[in-house]
Amino acid sequence: MLDLGRLRALHAVSVHGSVGAAAAALGYTPSAVSQQIAKLERETRTTLLERQGRGVRLTDEAQQLAATAQQLLSLVEEAEVRLEEQRGMPSGRLAVACFASAARGLMPLALADLARRHPALDARLQELDPHLSVDLVSRGAIDLAVAHDWDIAPMPAPPGVEQALIGDDLCDVLVPAGHPLAAEESVRRADLADERWIIQPPGTVCHDWLMRTLRAAGHEPLIAHQAEENHTQVALVAAGLGIALVPRLGRGPLTPQVAAVRLEPVPRRRLCALWRAGAARRPAITETVRTLQRLWPQVAAQG
Image (cartoon, rainbow, N blue to C red):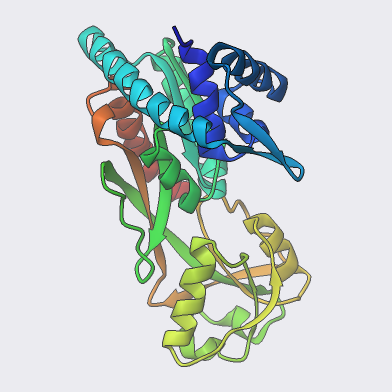
């Protein structure tokens, strides 16, 4: 009989694309995942992983086995949901993924609150961009994702995935303190046509929103610098190297070298929690979502 833990390791490699990423998602070491795969190869008398450059690829037999593993893991999840539902209390491991500023500004408060009230719940956080985390939820690799989208760059939930609104995060234009716009109470998009921008790299939700917004206003943005972290963008603004559109969540206090100016209309990004429809009855999911919604006004007020 095939070992479920070894099948879980193979499935994780198929979802995350590498042994190292699978190990991080499962909470194991890469060596432990490799050992699980090696034992599964001996059990099945089949080569499952092949070297490809510095990484590995799944053989055709491994891909078929990983698809079967996903079906088995879905059945196990359903059984776990029923047991937890009968107990009526959040318990067990909950894999949560969220984007960087929420991991900094929202999740520490929420996870500490959950740990204090529900000691049987083992919630584990992984920082991921929304494009990745939502896909991992739909594929069963993550239990719950906290993601965001923007008004003109919505990110609909995939089939089989449900979502709930947590709240709206407001954004400001950050400019150097000596910038001509620093003394303005508010600016409009047309006022920003000739500015040098500091933005996130292509492929991120924030980057896509800013590019679409400025182009819709008839301006091709001048990209001076790209930085993934909001704190890095703020530091570049403080050095006088450009301006940036930065959400308030997780931003922290600004230094005297940076001024926040309201952009009209005010940009908003919507924070949502997403989970698989099959796990909707799980108390760990429902209680975590309720906790995020309950704490959001406090977090937004601090921002």
